[in-house]
Length: 138
Image 1 (cartoon, rainbow, N blue to C red):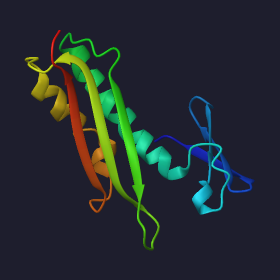
Image 2 (cartoon, one colour):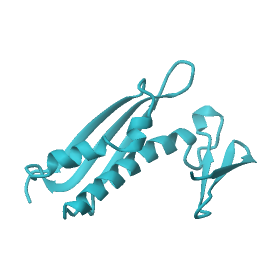
Image 3 (cartoon, rainbow, N blue to C red):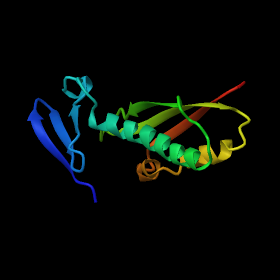
Image 4 (tube, helix red, strand yellow):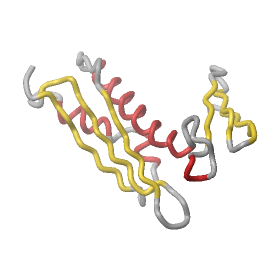
């Protein structure tokens, strides 16, 4: 069990503390939801969690198989619903892998990304589209 403590700071800002490390992450409501938009919103953290979880699981699998993923980037575009209740409706994921398209472990790496715990924790009503960008030459 990991404890996260959230302290409301006023003006729709929260200070979130990770229990084991005491690292802090602040959140702020987005401008389109009465906030200042000066930091990640809580729903931005969901998109961030998906990208970092995918990268982490891919990194574990890559390390186990002697594959270097240094420089891989994952970009997530978060879409919010236009009607109530306000929620994440879609996450567009772009994974840029610094390996050739014909890499022999390509399928293993792709399946590892979608095996991440965050991906499997998302509400099934959230549409997740994934675009893979592999290098065309080495």
